[in-house]
Image 1 (cartoon, helix red, strand yellow):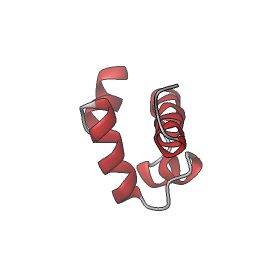
Image 2: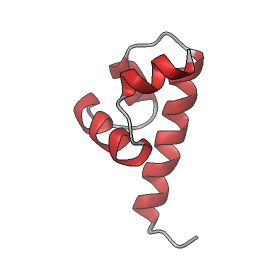
Image 3: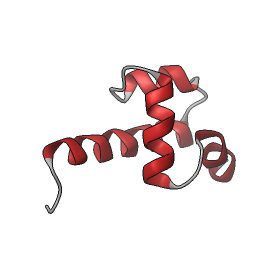
Image 4: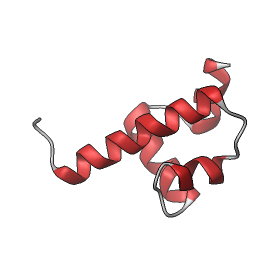
Length: 63
């Protein structure tokens, strides 16, 4: 796997969030909570680090 359990978990959560961003109109806070993040601010930070764009940019490009 070449990643720590925490890295794996964060990547998994980001992938789940990406699905919700593509296929729902849920708020960012709701998506953060459903994906297992404790706050939307932390979710936004991790998402940008791993995906390379903001949540808004990702949702706009997918829509």
